Length: 456
Image 1 (cartoon, rainbow, N blue to C red):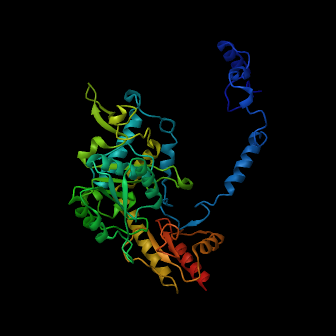
Image 2 (image 1 turned 180 degrees about the horizontal axis):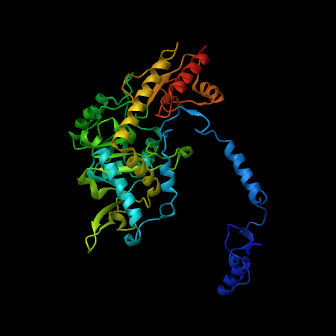
Image 3 (image 1 turned 180 degrees about the vertical axis):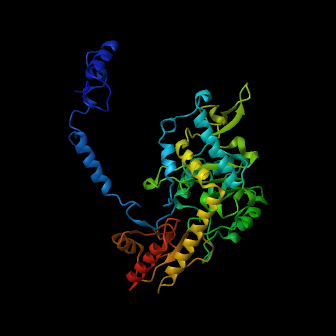
């Protein structure tokens, strides 16, 4: 018989008695004697009765079976979280206890493995984006974008941001919440009708010497690739910064934002070998040009040598409020996604330059094939003309709704696209469809055929 009552609570009755004796009380209840009886809860909590281990496993399996995941459904849903191939080695590395249980590496002498993992992640992000410096990761891409807006305002001493409507709606909401608290004005720049990319005329009219930065996502939320080379001079001619939110996988085929004049590049590393996890957690990245390095949120891990000339890793820059005076801090974020950043670094290391390019190219080609296959069906249209990466917008035939179509697709074992009407009323009856390297020709043809059937 086990010496304690609960296998996951490693404290015996004797342990409890000894602790109570050490602090001079007779019972657990005595610890709460300062709380008036009138405010104590004396009833039964609305929870189930205790379950034994086998009953608990059965209950959890039953709950898990209610979820519809991409191991059982063919997924054409993207909108920020994508069903990409995840090499098995990533799970193996992440599950190692020295990484899985590691926390903030305050003591570099005992945290060399964790520090090196973060350093490698930073190095990969710099190479991918062609920026000078990257930090030790962020919570996710959306909060990284908000932090980029704050950095731009702090650097330029301006209080206005020009924000493309092509940025992910959720990221725009987070940016708006952050901006409101600090008195920052957001100016929304619309999308060119029938094109899907940021309206450059409107952007040109808005950007002046009161604007701190132009915020662009490319490929944008609608999958369209923005003309960053044309946007860069519109931002810089009046001293504003150019902030680009990028899909890191797309940089396998697209020119890096750093080569196109971006001052800050952010994004979400989820496409780099990270599970969808029903929406998170994910891992954000944040890279800047060298003049902005000391204003970056979070931390930077650096490489150095010890007194014997042996390579080592340290926390080079920590501009967080818990390390320096609050008024001097660049951000109040207090942690990062080191474990998931490691997963992204492992993905990039095993894919290499050639693998990343090949995977990105597959995304482009398969999405293009799917768009053509669907548009060939009667009544279906592609309302946007801009080149796309792995997502595209489809306009459904009149009388079909995204909700009804997705319900029918689910019954056929297909996870359909994202309905755009709520976020983009100017695109009624339109669905955002994502096609990754995992989708086969037969799966794409099956989707197109089912859509045609529903339209009849």
